[in-house]
Amino acid sequence: MTTKNTFNTFDLSPLLSQLIGADALQSRLSMVRKNEGFPPHNIEALENDKYLISLAVAGFSKENIEITQEENVLKIVGKMPKQEDERKFLHKGIAERDFGRQFVLGEFIEIEGADIQNGILQVNLKKVVPEHKKPRTIDIGPTNKVIGVTKGDDVDELST
Image (cartoon, rainbow, N blue to C red; front, side, top):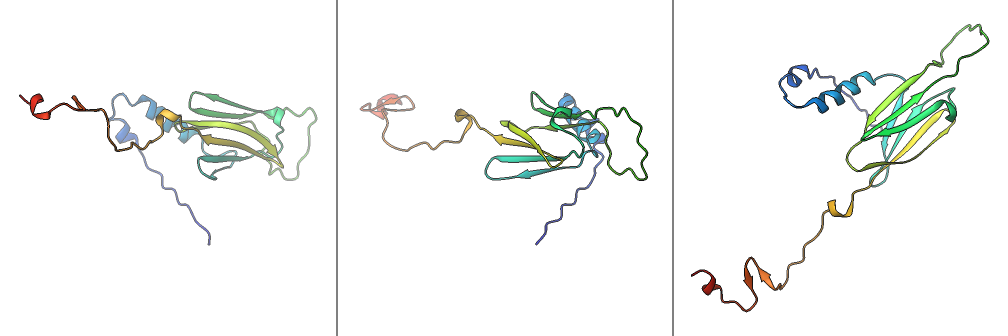
């Protein structure tokens, strides 16, 4: 069974013109709009809290690709070396052009590493939630204090 994703485009400019102080949101949406096209890419959700970005980068080697992270933005830039000899193509279907891609990373997303094989660049991501941000279970049981009441105090005495 195959799943087909259909994405609709919405013009958000009327909404954004009404938001005051939403510069970061406007900047991110603008970046996403500029980012469409080349090179084609996939974003996969793997096992729990792991993700994989795959980019089709035929003709590029790891020396021609730079991956950087600035705050929560992952930037991938490919620079194709200039060819010294002039080649005559009967058909030219491989783009061989420079590219730049940006991905906004969600909270607590870390880049684990990247690799390139057979013209596919793969960037591994993982969500690492700090311990103090994780949900925790609170045990219910006897305690020494209950909102201003110490064990052994008479509750009637406190209300007078």
